[in-house]
Image (cartoon, rainbow, N blue to C red; front, top):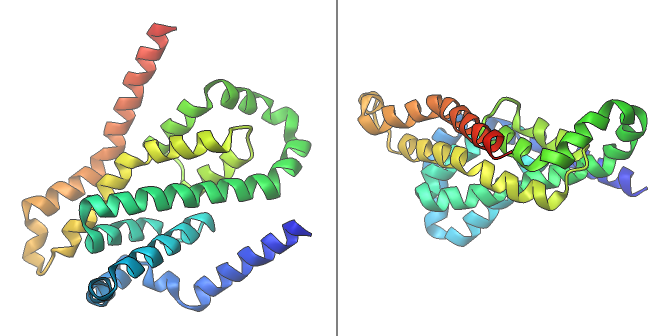
Length: 227
């Protein structure tokens, strides 16, 4: 009964998200068009806007809805680099952990019962090296963010481990995206696209996965030596 109530609640929130056209608002074009209004609200009631932004971000992430990446850029535009990073870091991690727990509560028992033998190797790997494996997935975005949350919920990884590894592993990527958002907020003409700050921010977005991959390779090499 509790599972059905949770499923119904998730379905209602998902339908409301699209019925209210929030999927259109949480696009780059939508944010840019409403940025002046958002900034006015932030000036009038900063704590309320932060609380609402944080809550929406958690819900979007927890329900695996589209818009988290755009909201990360918007955080940079609205709150600046450091506050934006702080807000997004905790909102994204809390939302991811909620998705992780929902997947575990709704699906883990059924999946483990039906595919337990096939998942033995995965469960063993998670028990042995789960924290570093998750850290690699968070640092190097090989798979969609929401998919990692759901799949990890089907393993034996502890929720506490999932939370702190996600918090640390996503921090660098969050910083890069929020920084790009601060630069987008400063665009007032097409000429501004060629400014060094804008070019550097978008170059950083492009090369971040490569830098993260190199970092993981270095860590792996050191771990093999120590073993």
